Length: 531
Image 1 (cartoon, one colour):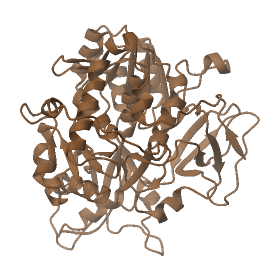
Image 2: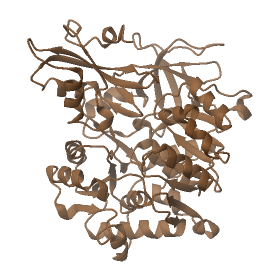
Image 3: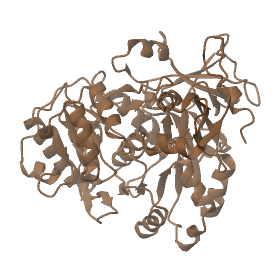
Image 4: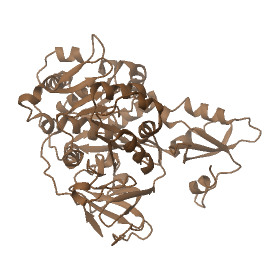
């Protein structure tokens, strides 16, 4: 049995992302403040934003960037990130946004796989960006410094190169190539078209209820699909003001809310933990906050309720993944009270968004699990169909076919239950990915790295909860005979070679890794007894 969204279908414009966001800009909206950088205090109006995006597109076009080109972008949050990102798209190119925590090797792998010919990088990340670009075959002339005084974005705007006339088909043309890790450890390029992102903006807009007089705190990274669609693009479409933080620091986060009178917040569960429990919260006036959306990882209901009570705000959450542009399920800003007569509990992730159809499928039999007359259904794998489903994985037809079936349903790999009024409750993941602070950590990648250590005979990595309930990577290690190897030795070895969010944070030494007859690691057996 399939079940549709309870929300009415929305119209999806057949336009590019740039035209969707800015083509109808007029009147007083042009003079509204679009972006405020907390690091410098600089303000950018919507008029200035559009002018600078157009100038960036012209400068890129003058350097040969246009339809068919892929440009990498690696930078922390800033108004310049927003301008560069939309400038790439305005030039008719495809943007592949890169995690700001990536090592040079990580950067090179993504650039090579995406077939990028240019990289735009912030000065703070230039050493690893240049090394990664060089390894990917990108010349130094094609590494553009985003914020340099003499060679940065301002210098590109000053060139006053004409904005190119670009013709693309929004329905099929790739706008962005974010990368999603798989259990094999090899990240896959997720092809998201202009229509995918435009559709997702249209689907979530009536539920988020962001208004033009809202001030939105932007600390979630724009390079992540959550920050890109749900935060950056959604706020710009609403003509709201984004108060942009380059990184999360609790005191600076609270000061920004107080100083700018922030009304809308987008966070991940670790920030919710601080808002619920940290004593620093009581030193700041956070009374302007109206709504906080938590995403990127499941929010514990008790934690969400504690934030609501302490800050006197409405907490909401949703569900999604890069392959869904990213949102597929969401709570309305009032948690559904107006439409359904009762609020969605924070143990759920809300309802299917407009223009989508869901199935809950028994993974062992392939049979649909029926919606219950009351209570919760049995658990099954969540399948989603809609205009926000990705076009596929870049250069990987096999993985695409394994993920999107012939009827257009994307198999999420997540186990879920549904209740009698269509609210979804995520149970567990079929996939073995570890989700640490919203980032995907593939166990196989860490296992392959551990096996390069001369003192390690075998290894397995699983996600386990820490004392705060956050999922962390834990390594189970088999030492080679007579090897001297401590837990700290293992953690330091991994930390030296991976991005910070991929670090192993617990280690246990065991005699043998449990495996099936086919050699598959029995991760469930490893998790048993972990305290």
